[in-house]
Image (cartoon, rainbow, N blue to C red; front, side, top):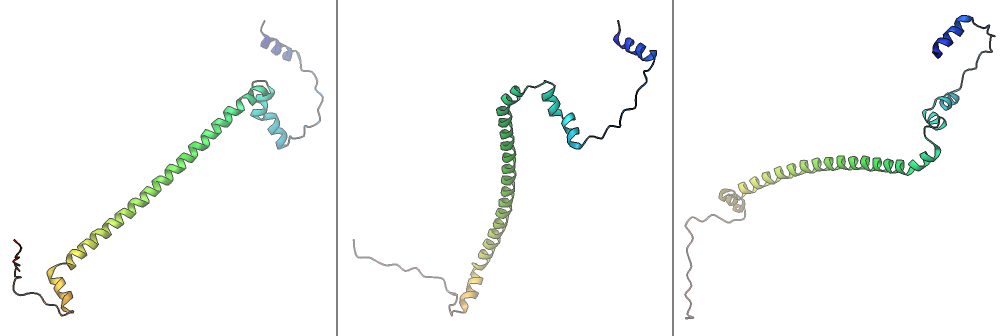
Length: 140
């Protein structure tokens, strides 16, 4: 027979007079947490025994350790990327400084610029071409 139908028939037969119960006092936050907590239901209802939970504890600790390693690795990778970007910017600056110094040196090493610099020392530019000096040796 249908159990639900029996319950409905019993209710239709007539409600029993109920006594007014004293108003229930509201539960505190701790009582609500204890009675409705997922973990407490999990252990109290017998879904997971305390022995099984303690047996799984090393595995959970291992997973937590792997999680910490994963987080540390991501922080290390982000710091490496930042450091690489900083070094790339520094290399670009040094490359531009090298190019500007090289161009300045090339300009200052021109014959006319060197002549202007040494003119203050009293050295003058040659007007006639240089002569070759030949030394005869008697050691044959």
